[in-house]
Length: 140
Image (tube, rainbow, N blue to C red; front, side):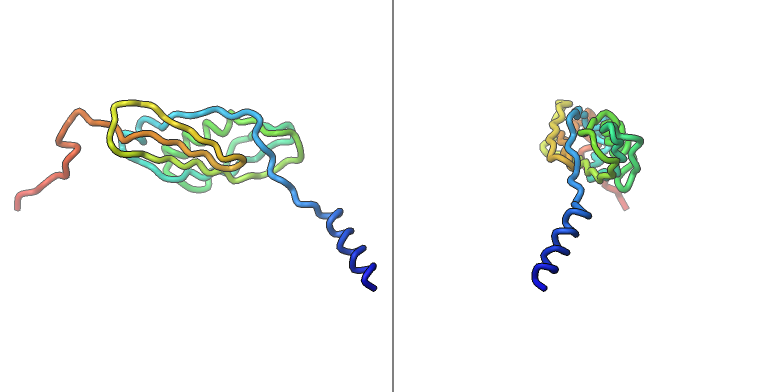
C-alpha cells in the first residue's frame, strides 16, 4: 500500500509541474512621467503582461493605478523581451515614488526586482512660483 501512495504522488508531480515565471532577457529603464512628477502623483501601476512563446509582450492589460503612471508603465513593458517558452500571463507592478526634498534635477532611478516588480524614483519638482509651495489661505 505505501508504494501505491508514493507512485500516485510521483505521478501527480510529473503530470502537473508548476510553471515558473519566465525571466526578462531585455528591459529598458524609464523616466518618471513629467506631468505626474509636476503634479506629485505617485503610487503603483499594475499591469498584466501576456507573454508570447517567443518572449514578446503583447498589449498589456491595465489592472490598477493612475492613468499617467499606467501609460508610462505600459509603454515601457512593451519594450521588454522574456525567455522563450509557453505562453504565459504575468502581473508586473511598477512602483512610482517621489522623494523630498524638492529638486530641479530630472534624474530618475529605476531598480528591477525580477521577474515582476520595477521601482521608479525621482524627486519632487521645484516650482518657480513660491505661492505653489505654500497652502492657500483664505480670509473669512
